[in-house]
Image (cartoon, rainbow, N blue to C red; front, top):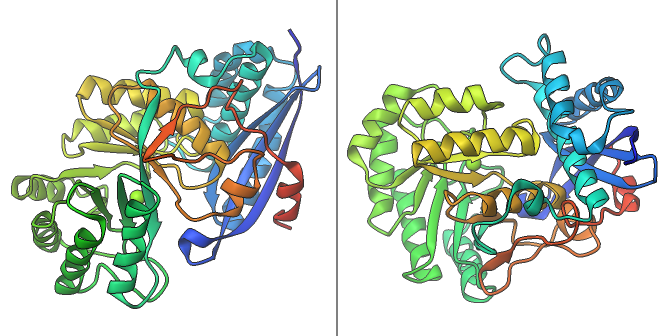
Length: 376
Ligand SMILES: [Mg+2]
């Protein structure tokens, strides 16, 4: 079996049409074996300084990866994890770096063995997952935004929508209760009676417990599948109070870094849907530990996949691997890191998304696209 020959990084900056063309940043890791086979990984670093710091960490971690057997990738993950005792205790940027390397090593392993990631994990519970359009609102008109999201369901076949509130742009959702409720009413009309609606508070907003309860109860009148991060993650008492007053699933967890953090959150008993980003929570190896915790707690796993096709491909395999997953989120509008980056973009059809079956992650990255968006 070939050994890992090199580990290199690509930092990118790109406009995201699903976020009103705001600039976002990612860090890619590229691992290459002696025989020229290449594996790709990604960290959802979001900001330019974090992206640069992650690149430096990946380049530093390379000495623990070069020369290793790609089939022994979990042993490599453990070595890196142990080495990050100082910069990565309980998470932080080191977890981004470990995520990018780990995803790349699973991709490389699959390609060398000629097996898709889902087979390496042990197999899928389901061959396809319900697809949900995950977007931000930015137009000032509520009617316009409700109708735009209605079209994702009615015309493209998505089985529901997840809407980020408190985002940049001019919609200003999350501030005035009556206006938010009116939006959800319009949205329900636009998507029809059966589509899922999920509302995500977003970190820019601050709600107190009473506000979170009143909003969630009012949204429930129009059929709400889950409310995401309604309060700050540390507010366990607030989550408990909210839980006593609503029947909607409560989602959270996307800010956690590792299995220990997720275990503490799950132990509070306040979260029904655990958001976990494979490009943040120590890669595929880390996410598998989170899935184990989710399954033991009989709650739900949700891939926080809102970056590149590399992340999405890994996320779909993880979502299909566990029976404790409700759906798969996709960015509905064409965008550089999903539709330009890979030869064959990941797509939903009639509201379903298939598990990738090509070797490794199942996507072919175009380096020319990484060059085009390179962060300098
Ligand atoms: Mg979220």
